[in-house]
Image (cartoon, rainbow, N blue to C red; front, side, top):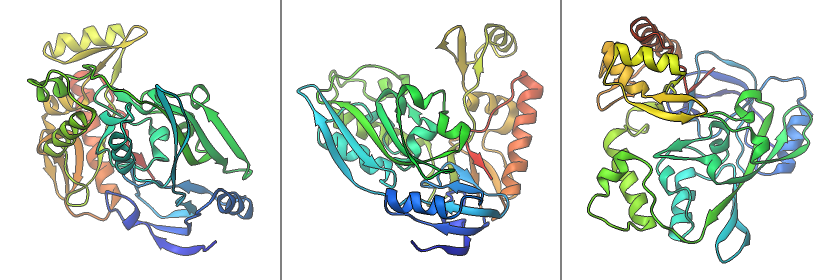
Length: 332
């Protein structure tokens, strides 16, 4: 196991902000991962996946662990389902492409999300009416405090909206994820943008759905390799009945969706637009011209500039509409 000291973290976050890690390692197996956690029990630890959903505002005084565990293999299958395990370091979209190519259905709506397989349960990534929790059977981990192996069933992951036990506690390193996918596919309408794009295709194939979602995402969202960003910066607000009524009084055209259990969801991008931040730029930071939910970095290496811009958006939305936008992105 190679430990690197004073490692520059700019290459490891898609916002490209500068910060230094006191220590940095990339374990390639569960054994190495367990060893590293036991060797440095008292060090503060941070687990990095693809770095596409976080950025740094300061140096990290501890150990950054970037798992490099790869591999995709079938655990079991029946006529209807397949259980497939993927290592934490596998690229998410490459994994989706692999599954679609082999006719395994369930994650095609999550195409082109910049992530690693290991990060998918942490954030419970979601798009176009699908979330990772819909198909995750179990998550395999190493406990950061003890180095012990621990396996989580879907229920034990405590999934929520862009949330999980892994995100809330920060106590585990994910080594691999087991997905239960269907071996047959029948398109089910889940999202209006997708329905519009597939209009005229009565029975879309698995590959057609993936290709359509890639086309939509490429049209709406910037490539972080070209224009630094971390995807959707804020969560879509979840509203109570009272908050829904208050919002509709202020914004009668606000999109409202039933979120279950007496709650409702609205669009953070819509609120940002209405607050006057559509395509707005201040210095080296701004909202993306084609999608206000994306904050983009035009050239700053300081995470504090991004945080300042975030606070201005939050304050304006709260002042105008009484709702506090919660960051989806991790800020360190």
